[in-house]
Length: 195
Image 1 (cartoon, rainbow, N blue to C red):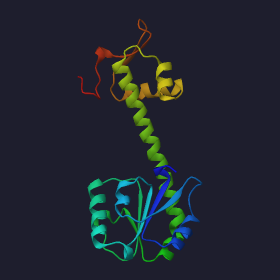
Image 2 (cartoon, rainbow, N blue to C red):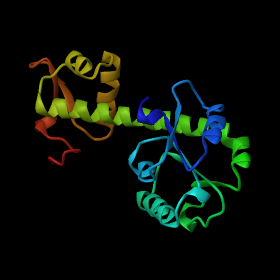
Image 3 (spheres, rainbow, N blue to C red):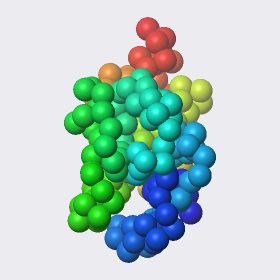
Image 4 (spheres, rainbow, N blue to C red):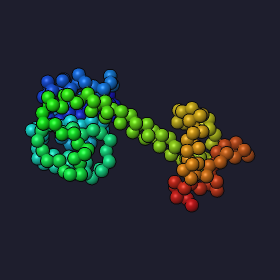
């Protein structure tokens, strides 16, 4: 299991975890029933489900402070039980009175979390690949599309799309026929602040 396929549950019984496992969004997904509260904040997952009755007031405050500080977060947050959610997090946290009331919506919530996670992973990969391509062109004027494709293990067509995206974003990337590869105009990058 990779961390991105994890759904964290904290404070639930083994029976409740087994019931939740019946609505997993795909075969790779796995519920991790954690017993250390700080794992919620330090382990990557796409859904976090915790129960108020088995969470200390201090841990709940830490949880709310963390997600207030983070601002935007991609994981789905679900709390079972009666608690006051800070005003700034009310739209971001799904609150249920009981585990049984959650079970009616859990399949939908986990599917939504999974889809959001895949979209975020795709965006992160795209951004990462574009930065690597820009960095390679900056460090190695004359690098070819084939070399970039090999380095990133992507198609030549994808390399071309990334280069075009970087151009649209303001990078002055050009193909230089004398060195038979890509280079930055004047060797300078907008992203790296060379101008």
